[in-house]
Length: 223
Image 1 (cartoon, rainbow, N blue to C red):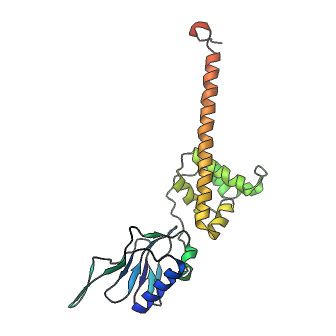
Image 2: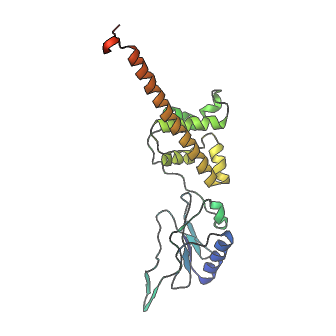
Image 3: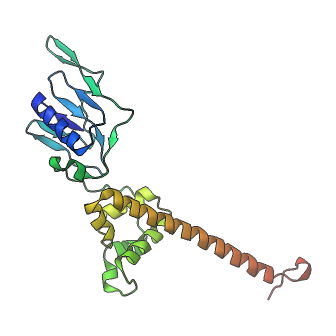
């Protein structure tokens, strides 16, 4: 959330948002003439401390919003919405609000322990091996390993943002975060589908093997 302290800074931030095409979001004015511009970001960011009468509140920080009332001595005045569409705008990339120069925070390691193979690949062991022909193959191997270990997509995204992985995701994430997430989700879906297909094939093989081991009349053949 952009928190502008003064009318002048509030107007300046609104102009920047309009130029970027991201002003159709919750916007409220404070009793002192400043205001807030609300937005959802693609990644957690470090709060921007007050600089030139503007802050960016994040990481558990909060601010007053309508219908709150500001009380300062004998003055009681409400916060008022200037714009309130059905939802807060979602920003696809930090590049859309480049003038704020926000920095992502390091990902919190909320996922479970990594499988050994995935951890080795994420740490760069593939660079000493000729097993994989490309970075894409390395990253698909990481994703497949994590999918097979039961990691949901959100945890895999956290892992990839914490580790440099094989490089392709990190490069895409720097250039276009939405495209990077879409690429990772596609790879995740392919790995999940491949796992389901493999399980079906293994079950079919085991069932056919079992039938071959049974004699006429259903008697089991024991060796």
